Length: 567
Picture 1: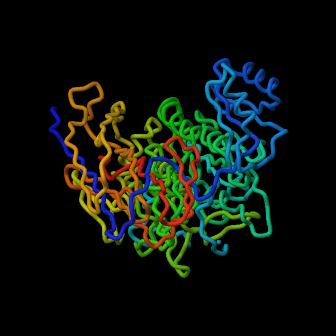
Picture 2: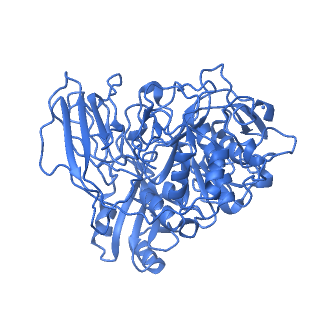
Picture 3: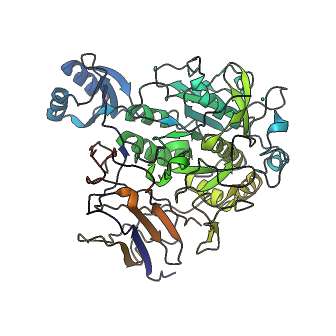
């Protein structure tokens, strides 16, 4: 079938009261200058012996392989301060001059916050309104259980602050092979106990997925016979190495990684995965599960109060993650919700303080009915995906994205931006394709035929520098690489890599319009948020700070868009 030329419209809508131009570029960013730690990631071609030689020669301690193939190694130097505002130039020079070193990077502190909302704790199935048929429509999980599907044989790992593995509602399903502590580098992911119970997040998320059923205690998990693991990685120094190792744990054993964290949801931070974490995602989807691809389920973020936008979060807007948003019991947009084009689907969570919330396991062998935020939504989706994998274990990571799109429905979800896209599906920046229906997901998974091999078509839209106007359209007629080796038959993902200059990124709106008129907002105006402390990163994820007053030039990212186009 010949593809007719199509037009991609890149719309740059800017407030009329903007100051002179400043820079804008693709990449992650943080509102703080990078803090360097005493560890390095190094790539060498000849494996362990070469890494040992480097360690002995320059005084490092070789902490072992980062990935199983033995090319990337984690080195630490005891003679370097634990944290510093500047990199260690001496070791940088040594590693740069060594001909056997292909790549290296001194690790920096990565600030990651748990996407939970500070609410009190409390406990049972009768309280699990989102799946006990108390309301209609709910997540339609009872229909799946009636088919005898409970997550049997599927392994889900929660990447967080640990998991209380001896909890009465978790121990029977706990999987030590799917667990590790990358904060202290030992096999025990038990959380660190404090007076404020700050490390309860992972245990709460785990209970939503696989709390044991029919044992007379607490509530029940969506996939209550799935194996559940926990990775402790948020309760200590967080680096690119830590994140990459967490996302790469046992990729042939673990089916689904559930993550309810990310860069700060403060309306200022534009940040994303580093070099190693991006490589972990790539390896996960290409090599995980015997080549079928690991499933990375991600909470979209809780920055609604700060006008945060999850398009500026490089984890949720990666094509390799399945981003999940929230709705309240009444089908309204929660106050913490972030609207963005990268969200694919939605499950339930809380609204205002008096609304019912999510029931799950809690620290000290307790239960709670006060789990909230998109943190609570992502594990529900992970459990539902586990049910789909049980009925069809051969689904690829791309298959699951197609299925989630088709199994999500607008239902009773209220939003002002529902639109019908070019293939007749309703889509919203608040909810993606709507409320995920477990029964429909499983029914579709049972007879799903594998998607074709993924192809990529790269097209340059702007070749020369172009002045930015207050309202600007950038049209491009393309044929999706038709009649070429990488010709596209049907569209799954669109990634926009854009570099432009402007003085205040909060005054900038960037949108992509498809040939059939579907408009996806890539960057939204955030004029209510002061952005003068922003320090953003280049496309490689390396820090290049640009702090200053609002008139100073700043950089912003509009990359990795997973637009409203699958299906």
